[in-house]
Image (cartoon, rainbow, N blue to C red; front, side):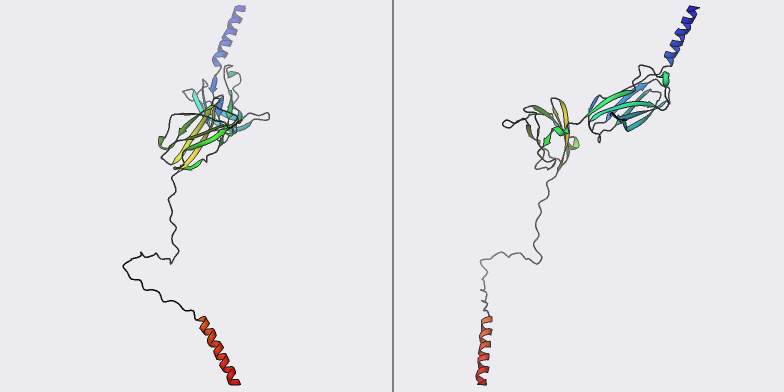
Length: 270
């Protein structure tokens, strides 16, 4: 009798194990802000099973839902989702699988339905001194400093329009007397206008990506002459010049004539 009970229990456990469904997914544990969070996973749930992949902001209060993706299991049993992070601030986030109906005990214990993701934004660790809007005559000047880094090696990775790219530039920062800020300056020769993207790395990894907008030099403009203004004729030495007649002012003669007339009238009255 005991053997029968043991066999029945074993069969029950085997059946329950067979009926358990597994779902698991992966996501990067650490990512720089601005790069999409790519999620990939697999499951043995039946075709047509629906669930949501939800991106939360991890916080002490009720987690705030940022975005979600609906997944429908297909015969391939694989799934994926992508979450943009362009407007997200640095910090801790979590990605969780949420079923439309609670799978209950049918969800196997080896399933993974939640992952933590840390978004890193180090853009505040670099100070730019050269403008990000430049002309071809000035471009491409990459100049600034990293506070408190001292003398160190940083790497610049540069991409631009029409497939422009150059090998990584490894440059050494310099410091001023008794200073701790690491200053850098690098000039990259470019011949095409457009947007150039400069990614900056240090020993800790990625710092930030800077977009430089390069435009063609503005055309040289000529100032038009005022309306009615003519151009000077060239001087010809062989052409005789007629001296201009001097202009004699008439005002003194008018005054003298008026005084003489007044004196004549006065003499007649006498």
